[in-house]
Image (cartoon, rainbow, N blue to C red; front, top):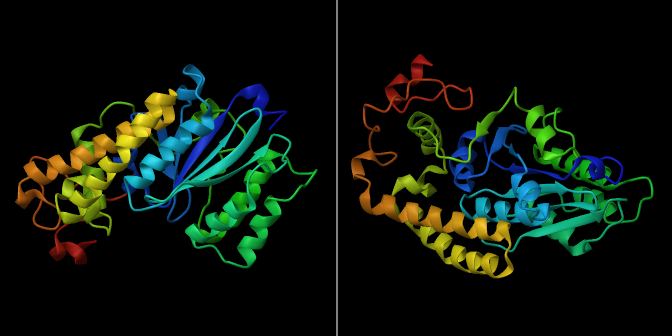
Length: 309
């Protein structure tokens, strides 16, 4: 880190324990340019372009912690933020409404976090309490041969046991711009603005037929409304904290949660019941018979067509 990242700039990755089709609708609410691609069978990775810490001089760890917290509260899957700059590197795990947990190292690899955080991290991800925790404990001990990027690689080696497989083009320690370029040929950009109607509906159609469907804002059901109220309850203090501390990451997280919660409540009040997932098809003028937003076929909502696939 001290030799490479100090010369090239900070960077970060957001690992989400969900498929791209489930991550995209939530990630778009961050209103930050990112690229999204798979990182294993049940994981996805978001690669941000780094504008908040490059243009606004916000600390990269503060920005991605805010993003991870907002994403995890807005969806029923955990988010792991990996980050680095010229002085240190680390990670933050956000899961639901629980307090984020993380660990960091100095650029030379010297541990600067608390051992207990590693054990909490392992428990929340369902890692093996013996073998995996032992491997994580080694990352908290001094090792002159391991710098900060080596520590993060060691972390990913442990996470491989729960299905994390980072694309080989992504090199830990590289700046955000190079990471974006590295996955440009295999991923799909998430623009700062709104999605087009077609891309939004396709992604929603994919998510609606998973266990995440009842929790998504457009479902309009009791689970979606409960999550919307919870998001607004958490979003207000985060927004106040961000404004008081002039912290862009926490401010963005608060705004995201408030917007996501308000959207969920508005869907519950205005969406016609016949358009809700699981009740009938979406309006006929919204095409669904095309490949998904991530290069994957969209499954039919008609049970009678199961045999045609």
